[in-house]
Length: 542
Image 1 (cartoon, rainbow, N blue to C red):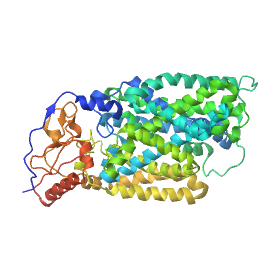
Image 2 (tube, rainbow, N blue to C red):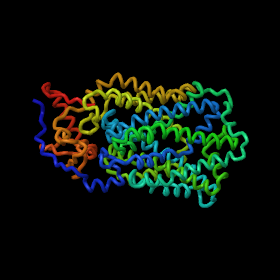
Image 3 (cartoon, rainbow, N blue to C red):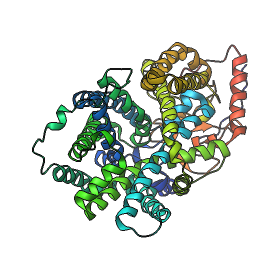
């Protein structure tokens, strides 16, 4: 006989949201939980929140720089190819996130185990803060140069303080409403800047004849080189999951095509890129474009309205950056330090860390750090894509196992991910032009291929074989709310588990389960007991 850990007490089930949970989620956005169907956002609301990431000087500057490097035609071909790649990835991952309600971290638990998954959250939290540091520093320097008031360190602090309120309320409470107001200001400001910059230009299409400034050492055709450069922001795919989990299942096609897919990237990469090329070309600094030169040009063209445009630009993009950083910082504190940090507290901490990084000149090292993290992200995406594709025909494929009490601490794919990514980083650092150009796509492809080889074996070892699943005890795992015996709050049955530490096997939510090492040890002990019993049935899951 297999070891039976006890007799489960009946679940405390309701079919309405817990008022305490709903009140807290106005700011928390179910950071440590599956997003229930009742908390999903409309397409309009979700798109306004996500389109905060449409802003950013990076897109303008990168396109202008690449045009001078490879020529306008190759630059445009590369940008369009990047839009196509990101459009497909955005569609796939947004659909998956809406169907499962999972953050990138919760999904990573299935891929890498409960402890291995924290690597993804560390990368996301750090990347969100790094991106915010860039935008904060550039905007503060522009304000300081224009107004001439105060010391620069005060402008850094002021910009951060102005950013935080837009993030604290979460997607539904503030981000969608705030960005709904700011989006038209950004779009109109960018269009006016382009029109004013080219008002006296007699050769309006001269930029399209731009040829490379020199031969260059690109280690790839110009158009492919441009596409690979844009793969440096693959972290957007993980960002997508943290936003798209808020989408309604019936909206997956619209969100996949419009909100997170092709349309978003056409506007973000191609639209912003064309604007950056035109502004840089009119100012005759196409080959020496930087965030500083673009911002200086915009302020010179628009005056005080240019300053408003800069603030709107960085406020919008930092809303997305700090939101992703905050929800993943919450996860890091829970998994690494067993500390319950609120998302508002995490947002404040992100702002403080960003401020300290600016003052200590850490930004001078950020480009290197982002390059390394980009390689790790490429490995994650390769593994995740293979898992989604190969698990489609498996029993239970509609929902991957993500509950802490049903998964091993560290999966074999964790070591695979780390090993392939480290090799990718070394290739990037020491492979010369070839390494800098090919390290990201190479890491993605190698990680995907290696995971495909170990997928079936890993599926048998990472998922724990346990009895008494609350999902089998309710009629609808999404509609039923089950009370957790630890926090005394009710969450969707889809994330609930039985606690083997008590003979009554009381219900426990995913968040409380993830906080307790004793809980996980008890779950592993139950699994090992069943492994020793050949009569114990196997539970197949994805």
